[in-house]
Image (tube, rainbow, N blue to C red; front, side, top):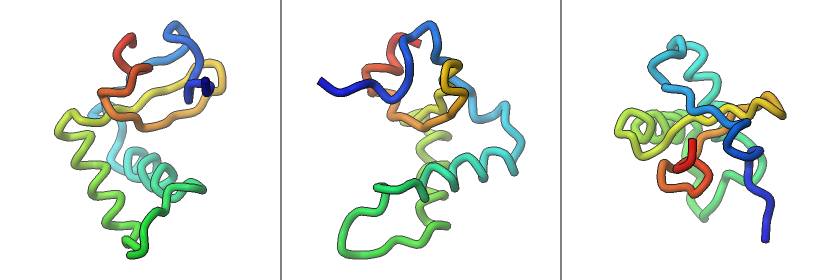
Length: 87
């Protein structure tokens, strides 16, 4: 069984994307979509397109930003992710 992408629920916090400045949100999403291992498939998708897709997921509520207080890092997870449901 793998390690969850963040510490136990008491260490994780959901961060409403609306609370971030436009620049901070864009930078967070850009870092997320350019992480190693995030480019799949035969057709390369431009970074701008990936960012817009993730922003749309955040706006629709199908994704959320999670801050891990232990590692002091953020990630973006599907709201259906098991680790998100307990936050």
